[in-house]
Image (cartoon, rainbow, N blue to C red):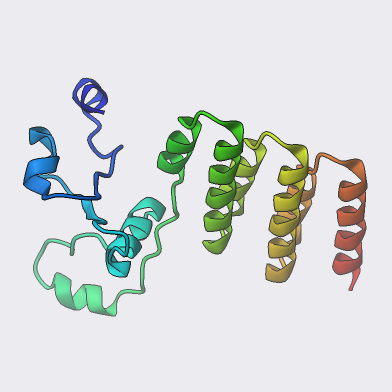
Length: 181
């Protein structure tokens, strides 16, 4: 981690997590002034865990805008929703040794992406999974998500990801019925 941060100068690639001890005693010196998440203990703080999730999903509040009258302008502005970027999660999952562990990680990323209505990110995670049956199970979930939202174009894209022609054909028939209704 130190070598990566020092050679690429990308210190945002890692989110330090404190599981035990004090931050000053646990962190390397170059991380001491950086953002970290305190998840000490077996029943860690729900708000700290939520902060970690918001950071990973890219939905954490940013700093307020700089400038005169910015507080008033910000109060009247519509809420900003960041499009989650799952590259950090994918890089963590790719580092796992066992394919079953990687598949669990990709499944979790796909679920988070669908919760954020990011079907493209979900499809990318699903396509990385090792087992066709697991991929198809998640493609079905993504397909249903698209149908519920009424997004038939994206649903058509999702059904092309099915590994088994029987699942793809059943989804295509359902899409045609939904589109003609």
